[in-house]
Amino acid sequence: MNVELGEEATAFGRAALQAFANAGGDDLVQAAERDPASRASRIEPVLATLGAWELQPRDSADELEAAAALCRSAGWWGLPYPVAERLARPADLAVDGLLVVGDGRSAAAVQGLDLRWAATDLSGRRHLAVPRGGSGTARDTRFVDELQLTEVPPGPLLDVALAAALPCWTLLGMLDRAMALAQAHVQSREQFGQPLARFQGVQFQLADAEVERAGVLELASYALWSIQARNADALIDALALRVAALEAADAVFRASHQLHGAMGFCDESALSWISRYSQPLRQFPWGAAGTLDHLSRLAGRSGIAGLFRAV
Image (cartoon, rainbow, N blue to C red):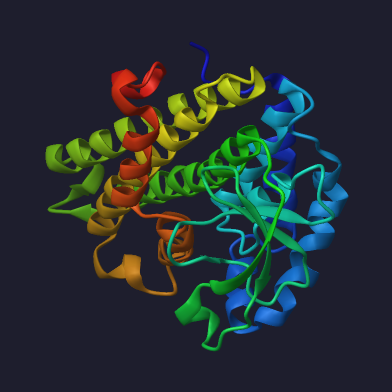
C-alpha cells in the first residue's frame, strides 16, 4: 500500500507549510495565546490565499488528499485554528464547519471565532452548535469552549467519518514535528563527549516512537481511501485511525519530552507548544478509552476489515 499522498496534494501541503512559516510559524500559536482575539485575523487570510475553503473533500480523491495535506501542515506548526473541522463542513447546512461531539460533554477548540458550526455524533444525529463563551485564559482552555446544541435533521455517516478522520491528519502533523524536534535535539546535544543520538537507549526510544507515527500514517492513508470509496466501514476506519493516533501521540510526546528533559516543558521550546495544543485533539470528542469503546461497539462481532488489526 502506498501511504504517500499524490504529487499534487504533496505539493499543496509543502506550499501550505511554507505559507504558515512565512506568516509567523511557531509565533502563530504563541501570539494567539497572548491575544486570542487575533488568531482569526492572523490565520484566516493565509488559508484564504491558499484556497483552503475552495477544497471540496467529498468530491474527489485529489481534493480529499489536498485537505489531508493541509491539515497535516497545520499540525506541524500547531496552528491554533480548526482547519480540519472547517474542511469537513457539510454541504447541506449553512455552516462553516462540522464538529464531532461525544455523548456527554460537548466541547471543541472553537473559542472566540465568529463562525457557524454544526455538530454530529457517531449516529449521524446533527445539531447546530453555538459556543457558550466560557471564561479562562487561552493557556488554560487551549481555546476549548462548551457547545450549546440545537437539533437539526440527521446527515450521512460519511460526513461523520470525514469529520473524525481529518483532525487525525492534524494530529499526525504534530507527531511529525515532535519527532523532528526530538531528532534534532539528540543530534545537537552531547553527553560524555558524544551526541545523545549515539546512545543505544536514545535510539531505541526514537525507533519505538517512529514506529507508532508510521503506523498512524498508514491508517490515515487507508481512512482517506475508505472515505473516498464510500466504503460502508468508513466510519469504523476513521475511528480505528483515531485510536492509533491517540496511542501514538502518547508514545511520541512521551519520548520527545523525555529526550528533551525539563527544556521540553519550557515556552522556549517549540515542543512545549505543540504538545500543549495537541491536547484538545486528544481529549475531544473522546480520549483513547472512549474512542476504543465506540470503535468496539461499531465493529461489533464482525470485527474490523481494514488495516487496524495489522498495524
